[in-house]
Length: 370
View 1 (cartoon, helix red, strand yellow):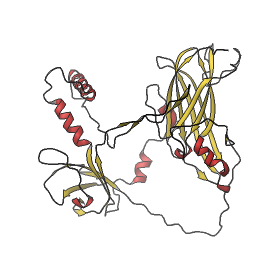
View 2: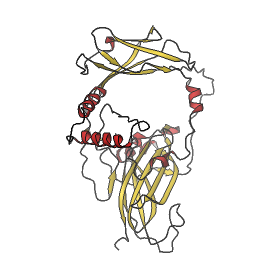
View 3: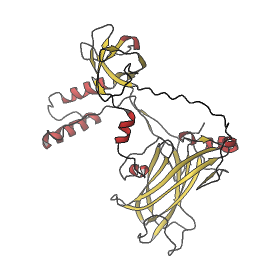
View 4: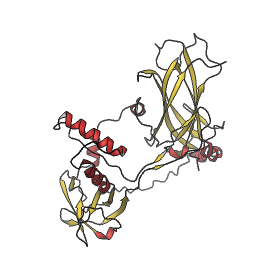
């Protein structure tokens, strides 16, 4: 398995280039009949509370009765969310100039989203609620009476973090765009249930056709100055000025052709977790894939300074795959950044799975010591 916390930057005999020699497996020319099936699953999250308003835990799938438009449905999937809090993860110390997007917090099994009516709520009331919510999240007692806001938030978060997820495949498989009414009851016990009461049975193909077209640069949307790091694709990077530095009149690396000198050229060495990439198996068990790599440099005010982006094909011979799993897929990129404090965002986008990983690194782009 890929060591998701420890990555060694090794030079491996793995090709990552554009484009490379392609191979295809030998195929049997005899026609093979194909049977295509498609099933619609409906997800219903249910909060169950007792007479005191406290969440009820330990229920089983058999305790729930689910119907759609009055017809009993068979619950095929069941999961209880117990409100497990996020856990801090302590990573091993990183070598100098090495960074990773491995998450330092293990996410909780549920997330609460608090919505405010910004249209109909006066701005001063919005500011008050925002301040009280921040105090609540940080554990700071309110300075004066909040009419039970803290208690209400505690109750909402407590109940919203403890719920049951039920899934079923509707008996009525016709996706006609009409509203389907959902009803959930408890087989035994008198409890209060909170859940969504229905859905529109839209055809998936029609809905996808009407959806906005995906951007040709999906990774760019995740590379904003103040966006969080994404960890669907894990990687480590070694970031340091190249040696020797280019001559002052050398052509710049990056899309900002108007960038003024002096500048520092940085080398970024990636080690990417191949287990997080969708790779096809070709002839001779060669792993094939495609990724996009992006570097964006910002000044302290968030103004873009320079951009480097490229798409590459992945080709990993079978004899090297186990080694790449251990040490990571090696990628080298370079970017020129004007002297001064800067902020570098790095990103990997898997073109086959649409998963991404990003990581932000603060820099002091000064002239490297000779």
